[in-house]
Image 1: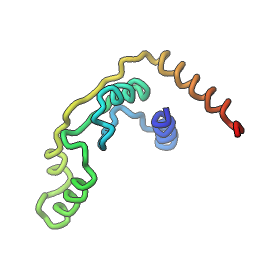
Image 2: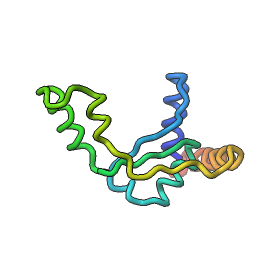
Image 3: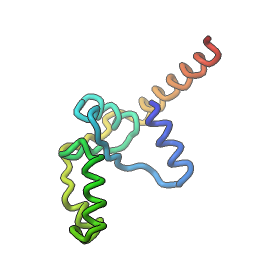
Length: 112
């Protein structure tokens, strides 16, 4: 739900709707979590074949900088998606869950 809040803030600031979210890192190996993210965000979630992309990104930047690769388009062509998840929840279900989350957060304020 925190991911949804971040995405909503980004959309509000930019005016650009999220249609696809590219993910990486260890938690992306969990297919159930990736489906849940797609459902909560109402957007496609795409996992690359190499989920540990921090070092890969540094290598790509160095390769572009030294001229090994011609630019971003060539680097993008090297990144193959492994799997993608489409949202399965209705907008009504997504919004109802978000409203429940907001109520839970509100109730937890000043708890301690």
